[in-house]
Image 1 (cartoon, helix red, strand yellow):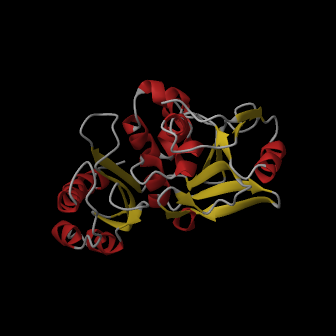
Image 2: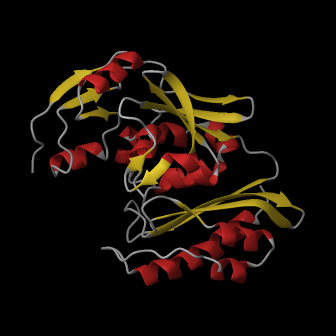
Length: 278
């Protein structure tokens, strides 16, 4: 199939993109386009206007500021993969990036686009939740920060307003005691995960504390497994698996029961990663 007809406008500054969103109710933003173009071709999305934000300067940096890693919205996955700042200070994101699609997709896809699209089977939204990160958004009233736990509202639904543009994500920089774990199960590398798990914690002697487990592919949004977090912090891996209290729905990839079983398999794998020395 081919997309339905639409108009096209290339924004040069953020304020122009925000204004265009206000003028056109059915407008969509175009960044990497790796999700959007597919939905256009299948006519799942039929915007009246595509607003290309790739020409906006200052949205493609990765910086370390006062103990926080800030990744701008137009940073490509491949750029983040090559970043020493990400590798050293955001190891969970570094672990997740190679699992996203294939090299051609990572060359064009953006971190901001992945977060804003909010696919429940995508890796980066779960990483942002596990890291207790936040999103920066620009709208008619200026910029605001939105915590990850408040950002993902439902299936492909976020807290972004109709005139807001996601401009950056921020996560706490890793310390010497930071531990990160990531695993997913997919039919083929590059496919969307059947189930995935992003996790972080802090080393506490031979154990863990401040454990955060964020699953993807098991609900309409990335999901924290808080009861399992408590059990894992207490060193009880079997108890953590038993404490997984979500109920995935059947989908084209697997039944809910299979997903629940795989979630436990991944928890055991990721628990081992969290116990590894940094």
